[in-house]
Amino acid sequence: MRPIRYTVTASLSLLLCLLGLQSSGQMGFAFNIKKPKEYDERVLRSEKSDQGKFGLPKRFMQNTVTHFNYYFNANNKLNEVLERAKETFRDDYSRLLPFYNYTLDATAGDSIQLDSITYKASSGIALHDLRGDWVDNLYLLWGASFYLQKKFDSAYLMFQFINYAFAPKEKDGYYLTIGSGRDGNSALSIATKGKKSIVKKLLSEPPSRNDAFIWQIRTFLAQDQFAEAASLIVTLKNDPAFPKRLQNDLHEVQALLVL
Picture 1 (cartoon, one colour):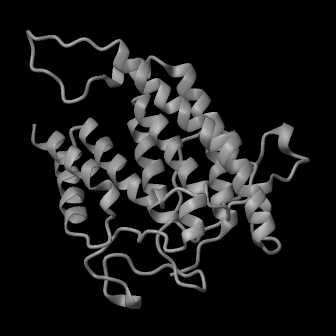
Picture 2 (cartoon, rainbow, N blue to C red; picture 1 turned 180 degrees about the vertical axis):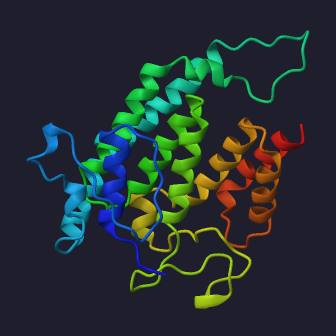
């Protein structure tokens, strides 16, 4: 397999962020995307991610700005959207009570805030080095905002993109074969192992690829794709690398499936 190219990820983010189109790409292929006029003369920071070393000082600055100026604000907005949806929710005892104490119709009605989350997340990606530690977390927020807007096709593409783009890689940048015994990988695992570095655990969020699996299951269920949801649930339940921190979420979507 070919190693991931930062320029591919940058091009995809530009395609989704600046052109507003739904798209998916196969890793290993380059995209030639024409920028909008206002960006013709500007090279974004994400487009220079394959240039120069990404040492500790640069990583610290990029991570700090991306975290507090973009991820922090977008994540707070997402939580506020959910809280507002819960505040307006009322149980109707004449019908079967829903699983959650909010509805996607209510979250989708908060479109201005969800659009703001999309803008924050996409800007945080496009304007910063793609080698930073918060890029996958921003993509996850972007996908979650699509889900809460009931844009399930776009949400699916985003979570699938996270699955491919942030899959485990060898030291030389080549992808390990997922779900196979090749390359020293576990044949029973598709999940990403947690960060071992204490510094990374303190200064960044856990890998969002595992969270994307949970959101992918929610997206399947929202579209009544029960076979796909069940298959992924069974796979994760038997995955030795799937983190303990997400076990409750996995049990939650499993309960949602059997209702």
